[in-house]
Length: 403
Image 1: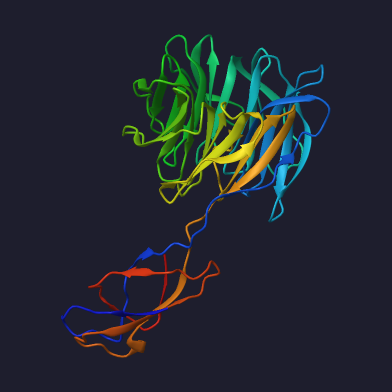
Image 2 (image 1 turned 60 degrees about the vertical axis):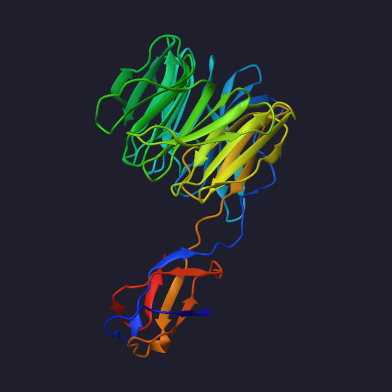
């Protein structure tokens, strides 16, 4: 790509002025949805799925299966470069509540469910089948799990109509708290990139409480009217919250110290039951149920811009993998008593590498115009435009650059 750069008159410049690459024209691409995969594929009634992604980009789904025995089922999806291959096995038995799953940065999986008391089981994500034993924490239902950068698990659940919390390390809770008042249920939990812990729940509106790593809990806040809040963290110290209010899906971003910002309303019909997943770079996928059309839908937010509502198909109880290690989001839902899976492939911010040369490497001394050549050597395509900053210090000819 060649264009002209007009420097301001100033002290003599040497052979190359290394200019700041401060903007890149976007290649027009958008999130895309893969075909569905039936990952339960058996005659039993399969419902209430949850899914998590591991650091290798593989996925781990759990759901409840009622074939007379009320089982918690598990399936690992191995990424082959273009799609997932799934297998299924049992984790345990359930009585009261749907299961949940998360995967830590060190590859440890945790599954939690209720069988009269809250049960947890951990094993390595490298295994094709569940391992380890089952541990019991407390009475309760509706477990949610998140992980921090030290691979510690954080759980929130409803017990005695109160929101309960546990920081799990190894084989037991090393921190155990009750964090809500009465009449609280449906908690969801996330841990930000600074290891701050954030919990949302239903309790006369959308309630929120958080604590910094190793610190005490802050005060309970009411964020809004609404129900069924879900929360996920990116890699930039921010959490992303969705909930249903007045048959619309509401979204906001929040930091530990700040309030909700960048509020956004998703309105495709009578919209209910949202779920949210976020990449480290801050791309967002929200899945939800459009009760007007009887369909599941998703929307994505990439590079700060929301896309339109996209149809997934029929079904109920959609879940988006909350902590995304790679730029694709797995969705699971129940349709006709089978667990379906699909992938939303997100657009990673393009990375461009190469060299920038001014005036062919020749000296430039107060010239009215010089020629700037940028050679892109990455495999992600050629950008359509650049924005360059004036007034940088001289550099060396053909200095490599990358964004």
